[in-house]
Image (cartoon, rainbow, N blue to C red; front, side):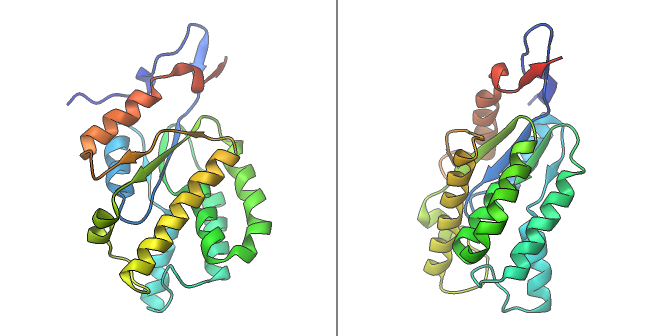
Length: 212
């Protein structure tokens, strides 16, 4: 399949396209990492991993009880600080997993007392970047259960938790005024089909351009 560069997105004469920041949001097991890598290959841009997952793996290595369902204000603050630090390094097109809407989704479900101080700052950070697009990913509960690998609680508790986080994240993205694409069911589409659906949605130059 011929790669599609991000620069192939049409743009009117005299107008330059802004860098795309594509944020994939979905519950654990929805296929964010797999789709991010393939989409980035097609757009010829980096795919950046979910910071919360990277820090969670480190936390679990140090203490197996620090699973995602456990309230942990220090962890959620660390995720927010690391995300903002990485934002400062973003250049050009990029595919992101979870990012600020997803991080705030976790806070809203896991440590809601932090929502007051963190949500406005996360919103400002997300809205500071141009051409942010949020792509929600879904899958059936049976499919998510089959893909479940995260520790903590019962399988049903984990499914409920990660589904609530994803729904909250999409809600924040909409409230912040970010462009949210129609959800993609990764249980119904293979990776290539999902990539084609996203690229078709991105083929709308008015949403991603600014005057030169």
